[in-house]
Length: 113
Image (cartoon, rainbow, N blue to C red):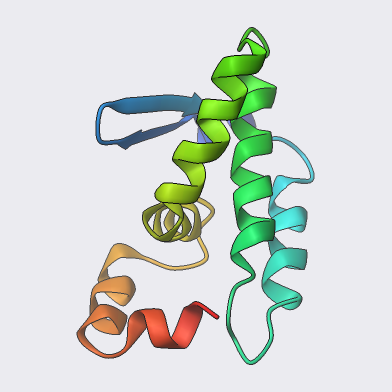
C-alpha cells in the first residue's frame, strides 16, 4: 500500500452488531459533495445519502446475495441518522466535537428534512 492509500485508510464502520470495512475511492468525496450541495436549506437528502452508503458497502462486498442486499437497504434506512453522522466524520466534513456541539442544539432540525 502506498503512502497516499495509507493516509486515506480503511473506514471501519461499526454500528450495533454490523461492521463494514470500507475503502474510500476516487469520486466518493465528490459524490458526497454533490449530495451536500443538493441539500435544501442545509438539510441533507437522506434518500441520496442512503444510496451513497449502500453503494459503498455493495462495492466493497460484491459477494452479498440479493436477499442480503435487500436486508442491507432496510438496515441502512433504519440507521440513516447515525450513518449520516458517521459518514460526515469519516469523510472529514466535520469532527466528533463539532457534531457534539450541534447535538446540544437542534442537530436533527438543522440537518434532516
